[in-house]
Image 1: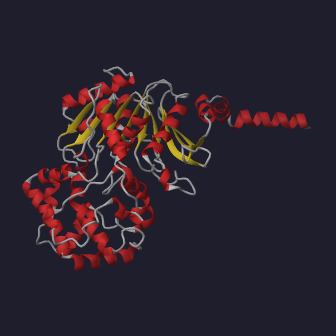
Image 2: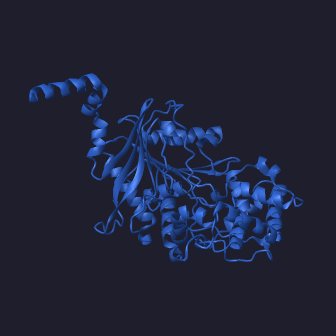
Image 3: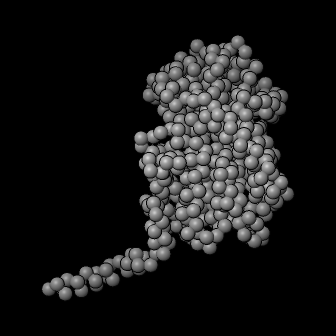
Length: 458
């Protein structure tokens, strides 16, 4: 009887699931991933010419004291071929709640594999309990170093790192601390706030960007909004009551939230709009409803609320302590502001997370990039506020490009033809890909915009 049951089960395996049985018996990639210590496979999706994995990797909460607890860092893997180059993508924030297969620009230009990493302390990649002093640029760079080291056993080809905005900054920091991990870096719209109080570059940007008439119209919007504070704050309070927004956890009050949003409006306009959108700026004769609605469409009244800010606390914590935060004069708003010291990163944090700024890390990174870094491309947008303070690359096979008229979404494709060709050639040379290589066009893989932010954050 026992022998008969074994025979029946064996025949069922062959008859009912031959494909499943074959894959279970012969999946070297999955076997390799599962063999990496600390790496767990959450999901595995098969696409046309690629596989897409959601993974977690066990990291020390504090790399200086690895015995003091761990956390699971979320990452995704877009796999094409073990012989292709691999792009390490750091967006500086969290991955999407339901990660999807998508490509960065370097990934598409190289037809590469792509490893996307969620930044530590963005949920769910946060230690529990969380010691926020473990959130700094060296700790995250060491997270990435361990991931690259672990996966080089699977992908032995050349590695390129990329990221935009805060993700671009993150890629620079990784390169600074572990320069041998990857073969080149493409950092998009990455600010370099070397000494936080010295932010004249941002004021100069807003004095010169676009046309004089557009700048004047945007300044008028801010003056009008602050001049109508009582009526517009009442609208914000009504929206808060209707939507369940609160203010006491970080920004403090609806009035402070209102002022911060108004201060952000011009920045947000240039960050994500274009010169052509100047025609949409409301006139000083606009009604309260029109003015309130336009500011909402540009800056978003819901952002400076407890619900809008909490997901970004790790960013503001880093900005307050290490990364820096643009300080603007707002000369045209004298006499209209109620909170002169409001426009800081600490204003968006709960009191227990506010901290003093330490200028040393950014000075160190800036000096390293200027002098000894190599194989680094920096791409900036001409009309992007975050591009006002830029890294200065060394002359060691590195370059800086500016996309004409581009905003915070600047990339290689938006450069002029000569610069785009030069940048692409350098990227492919670093990755060991022929200069004549045709970029892969995959309809089922959207091009990732590489920006994890949609408001006045990097």
